[in-house]
Length: 292
Image (tube, rainbow, N blue to C red; front, top):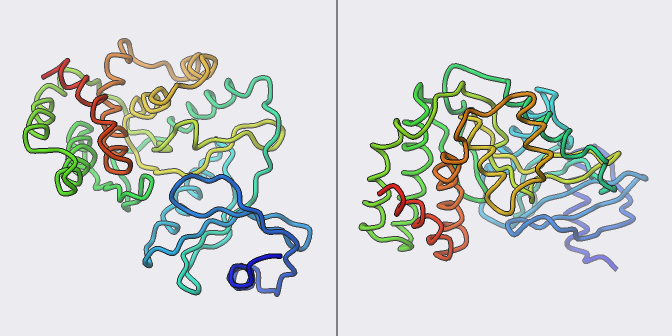
């Protein structure tokens, strides 16, 4: 038997989204990360994916919907449809298309690499976005900059360093050492066009969907150097080698990319420090010891 309060909440958001009183036949909790509750909801022979939380009112789901819509608009990736976001009965929610998991297609990794390269060919003159959004549950600042390194320092590193200092996760000496890296960045990083990025691309943010094809979820989009995206895919175990080969066939990376990947991954490591604690500091320290 479904929890009556939960069922009432789901009936309310379905009515608000589709304009009809649903006869819900199934509510099933599904895996969806550590930030939100995630449900599979079935009614009228259709299945939907519902994310919800009881946090204070915020625009997290609005920004997620904007990100998914932007990725779907460029039409190079498989992206779940979104139907509505809002707040009812003290809960924030987002209702989306439910993607049934299927067996992986033989050329799954090649398709993902080619599709991501196609995404990265969507460019603009500046780095950033016309709105801020989130990475995980943390705010992500996207103020536009004409220079990539300025963007990386001001909108990525400094924001996360400041949060870590505020929360007592790092001290001033650690922050000073980190900032000693900044003057070296122009000699370490390469100039690339500003590409549209998923922004949070690791193995937890793609899934095998219809016909065994890759679907991307949980974006943190912005326009940035595409190398930062490829670096992130390597951070927690990495993707299959076929993915990188396919990507490079379409949009080859500059030489010595691997020497820059560890610098770019300082950002997601700082994010993980602020989300999950100081165990991630050792990875940052190793990179700082190399350059500072």
